[in-house]
Length: 262
Ligand SMILES: O=C(O)CCC(=O)C(=O)O
Ligand SMILES: [Fe+2]
Image (cartoon, rainbow, N blue to C red; front, side, top):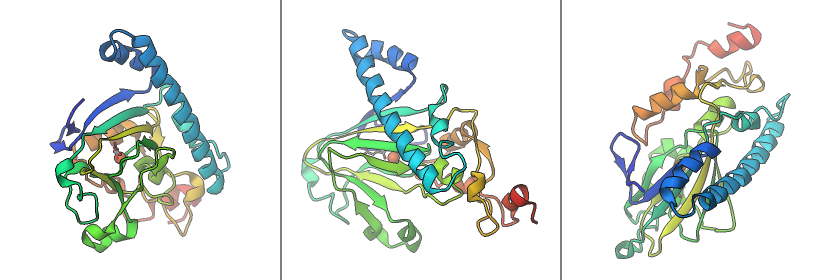
């Protein structure tokens, strides 16, 4: 477990475990985590990963269909590539009995997990019956409306919370939005959340899908690799809006390679 988040000074009231989802990587970690039954640990993690990966693929295929992609599986194929860079993260937030009112809006609870957007393609979160997760209404983010813009996500241990990541926003040319979220600590019971972050291979080029780039909706972001995006991310604080660093100017660069205008 660890309390610092990233390497740029962010901290939160939690301890967490991050696992790369590749079975070889899970097996290596299993030897350190469950010395008596490493195989049992690997089995549980691999089974969970397989199940949430399938769910993520179904969601991405439906989105691909909804977006009218010529190949609706072009999103899911990024996360099923054998060298995909997906992660599983288990977050444990200890109880905060002293500030039980803190999860109310404006209650000023401690930072469980600071505000951020998830950088990957899609996140699939499953948590216990303890709340704390909040999302920032996209339009309210700009309106500087203080804490009122944060909407609590009702805890539901039987549901999955699906989050669009930065890469999916870039791939869909901004049609799908990577929503800022955070966890406010302050419940009397521990919160436990397991999140699968579906990511492409490091060398994958992230570029708006051609169907999402039109004369009316020119390309928003220049193409970049996931490795490049991660490298940029590691130099920034958790709360930084990293995608803006990949914005193209107002020169219509995206239209140029799509239909030759400008
Ligand atoms: O722990 C949670 O409920 C969410 C944490 C989160 O947003 C993350 O790990 O990216
Ligand atoms: Fe997150």
